[in-house]
Length: 113
Ligand SMILES: [Cu+2]
Image (cartoon, rainbow, N blue to C red):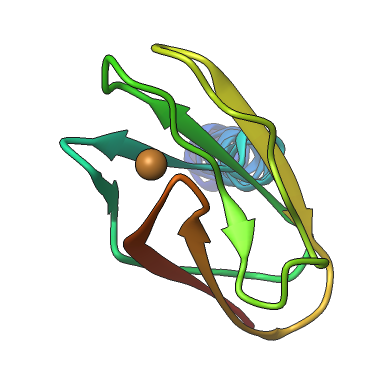
């Protein structure tokens, strides 16, 4: 009788904990990762994500920027005006160096594991 009283709440607590951590992982995957463009630079300069992650770039500068993969073909955004964003989902592991085609000195990389 005494044992039942303790085990009941512990089981409920454990179930809630498992459900909560599962939900948190799903939310993180769905929301993806964000890279900001500010003062002519990408931040973070290097972002590491698991394969399947959607990465979104947001331009906070008041001039346009683009997001273009080093090989020019893997991904290529349109020109992003102030506060515009653009997303790409990385499906294959690798190191993806990219730059802004309007200001080629702006470079950064995404590492996909
Ligand atoms: Cu630029």
